[in-house]
Structure formats: C-alpha cells, structure tokens
Image 1 (cartoon, chains in turn red, purple, cyan):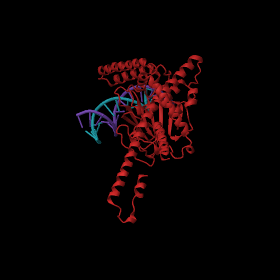
Image 2 (tube, rainbow, N blue to C red):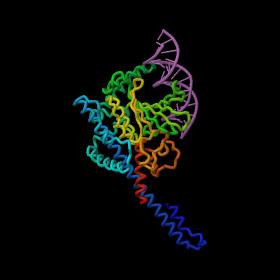
Image 3 (tube, rainbow, N blue to C red):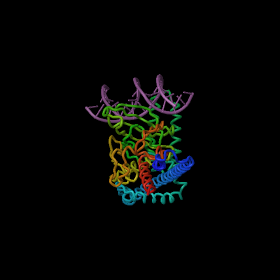
Image 4 (cartoon, rainbow, N blue to C red):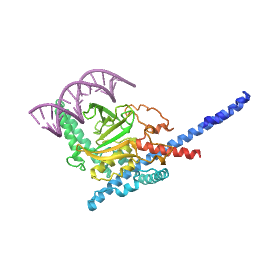
Length: 390
DNA sequence: CGACTTTGACCGGCGC
DNA sequence: GCGCCGGTCAAAGTCG
C-alpha cells in the first residue's frame, strides 16, 4: 500500500527535474504515514492483548459455571448429562464472523463482571492446570489449602527421599506412594481408572508446540506399536510439578503431525498463554470424569477442531485433532485456518518458526498465543484490517 | 557452569 | 514364573 503510494510519486518522465525539496517533502510525508501505520499497529496489538486477557478470564468463568451446573444437576436428580444448556449456547462448530464478533463483545462484558470478583478470579486463574485442578478451584481457600497440603506432602516425601537416597527402589516406592496419594486426593478420580490424559494431534514441524509451559525431556522410547520414537517430557516450571507429556510423531515425514499427550495437574501458576489449553483440557477431563457422552461443551474451547473422548488402557483420554479444522471454509473465504496459519515453536528454546504467507503483523502476540486463541485472534485481526481498508 | 538432551539400564505392570 | 513392553532414572554428553 505504502509502496504503491511511493511509486506513484516517482515521475521518470521528469528526468530528475523534480526539485530536491519536493522529494524531501514526499519522503517526510511517507515517513509520517509509516509512523501512523506503526502506531495503529501498536494500538491493534494492545487491543488484541486486552481481548486475549478478557477471553482467558471468561474461560475460567465458563469452566466454573459448567462444573457448578454439573454438580447442581447431580444433586437434583443424578442426571449425568451435564452442561447441555451451556454447551448449546457456547459450543460452535460452524463459525460465522459476525457471530464471533458478538461473542467477543459478550466476552468483554462478562470479563468485566468477573473483574468485580477479581480477587477470586486471579486465584482461580493462577490455580488452573491440566487435569482436575479446576475441581478444587471453586473455593479459593480450599484450593489454597489443597496446594499447601500437596506441597507439604511433597516436602515430606522429599525428606523420605533423602533418608532413603541409598536405595533407588525405595525412592521409586516413595514416588509411587506420592502418586497414589495425589490420586486419592483427587476425590473425583474413578476407582480402577488411571489419570485422565489429553491428547493433542497438531500439524507442525517441531515436536514441541508452544503451549505456554516449559518442558524438560527426561526420556525417549521406541514403542513397539509405532517405530517412531516417543519422547517424554515433564513440566520444568516447578520442581514439584507432576505434569508430564509424551510427544510422538504420527507419520514418517518430518512435516507430519505430532501427537502430544498431557497427563497430570500443574501445582503452580501458569503463564496466561498456557491457560487456554489448560482450560480446554480441564473441561475435557471433567467431561470424562462425569462420564458424560456429550462433548459439545468442548467446542467452546476448541471451536474449530475435531475432538473425541475415549477410554483406552484404563486411561480416560480426550483426543483433540488440530489437523482437522472443524469449520466451514466458505464462511471464511479470506482466512483459511490451515496449519500454515498457526505458530509452533520449541517451548524450551523458543526457536522461531518459519514464516509463511499467512503471517500476521503482531508477532509478539503470535509467539505467545495458544492454538485456538491464536486462530481466533487471526480472524479478528483480519476483520479489523478489512474494516480499516474500507 | 548450569540447564538441557541423550541413551542405556532398570523397574513394574500385564499377558500368557 | 517368565518375558515383553511402556515408563522412568541417572550418568554422560552437549550447548549457550
């Protein structure tokens, strides 16, 4: 756009007759325009950052509402089909831009409401993690107690580890007991079932999608069922965090999808860019815990993607397939949500991913946004650009 | 030098 | 009881 304007100012036929002062004036004008565009870009960045914050606040709120609805329905008649009302309102498999903008407006309104209880919401946000922590988030005091309780147990086990450091077997036993205590502590864990797992299948070139957390690799194995190696990571944001994830390539070529399996609950505050995935996976885990066959509430957290619920090998598992966008491309003709529009990078080293034709101008947010949030921001940004051109 | 990755060994669960 | 297999550990190596 600016380039065209600049080109239009050049008059080769003049043969360099144009006065030097005129050129300087036009150069200054162009610089001013560039500066103006830059300022607008900054404003857009700020706006998107605010929307992202509001969006995450709403997710916390919705998660709590879903759970409270479920508890209420269980108390009333034991009906297990929870969250139907909410998911009918919030779940979307077909995307319409105008509806989406309306939704964002609602999000802003609701986030203002949630800001009125900011003390509580901050605690809720900081306590959210993968798995079932959301179950304990309703009462901040309880949550606080549980966290303290967990840490005290952990420190006890650390002492036990120190005492028994001479025996590796004893250390392992102590860790196993700790694991079992955590399972028992989670009263919602069904007997006979292992921890809920959340699988995310994502198309990317790097096995570590930027999910907002820091991970440390502690092992790699080649499973018999799949000749491709499976890598094991644990959360390194807290030395006591029990969350682990497995990453395995789905295809032979390097550019194929990766399957990431999350297991466990973070025992520390998460960065804001990690809360969206955490909220979605928490909702998924809650669905599995409830035994509900309705997965429509998940479409709120992952509105553009396929997901499925299953129980394999005693592990209740939610599989989110980011390789299969769940939307009607005809409704979004100018901004396809393909893998090329998503940003993936190593969470440990934050290596930049290769740029592509769909790269947006707010790179600072781009590198931090979680998958679905990013795709929604992309839509908003595109619409903003379109309206700006008109 | 600390943080992280690699990799062979080890352990426990599970099926036969 | 035995062997297979997935998951974890920890020493050694690598990197910034």
